[in-house]
Length: 250
Ligand SMILES: C[S@@+](CC[C@H](N)C(=O)[O-])C[C@H]1O[C@@H](n2cnc3c(N)ncnc32)[C@H](O)[C@@H]1O
Image 1 (cartoon, rainbow, N blue to C red):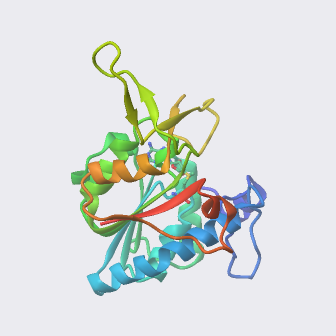
Image 2: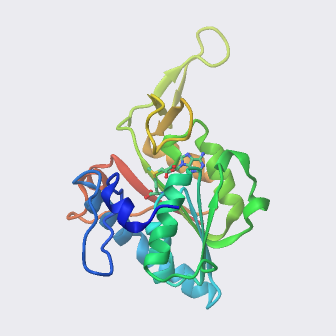
Image 3: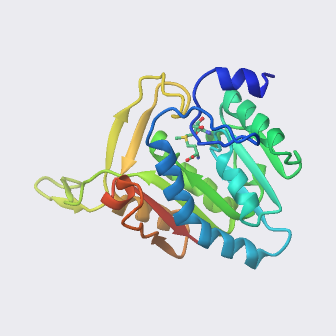
């Protein structure tokens, strides 16, 4: 297990952690703080309300937690216990370092190294709030992850994704010769080279949905109410411009 000091000298971080001594960590790129601030501001009111509704023993699941920054937010916003899952040992080491740095008990933030494609909802249980941020566009089977999230959600699931700009339907011949169909929901393929430590492990085809596909997937996964969060004009341009979106599914 590495120490916080060693990690601070190592690779930059993906979240803008402010340490207890006031020091800010180095982040991997200059846009990340704005992205995380935007997501947190868009998510916080709905998540706080769902956790308050669930009461003092409210639980939350952070799927693909990376360094665990949003797991900390879930505890701040009212969860009594968070389970934080990631496939990479390195990320969970950092998550453990930050959990300990802020004096959070391991029982309040349970870190589990799991591949979301190797587990079922029964392996995790159900939670009042589930966060599924930044994952569905890094995997080959976004529906599989959404079904897992649905199976683990008691009340609210927050899904966040990059989106394509495709608004025109995609025309395809499905069925008989000469028969053409239009699909409004579509995906772009991003070929991951295998060195993207944010994507699923191995050489992956990431499927990036358009806005309609993101909504359709959540509905087909079994969520009854699905609605996009509305960004403010001063939020990160990717959200304002529609290249990323936050979806509330309940
Ligand atoms: C872009 S980061 C998103 C981190 C965080 N959820 C957020 O949005 O701030 C993607 C994360 O998904 C994790 N991940 C990728 N494939 C996974 C899988 N199959 N099972 C669990 N975690 C996975 C990566 O290790 C990485 O931490």
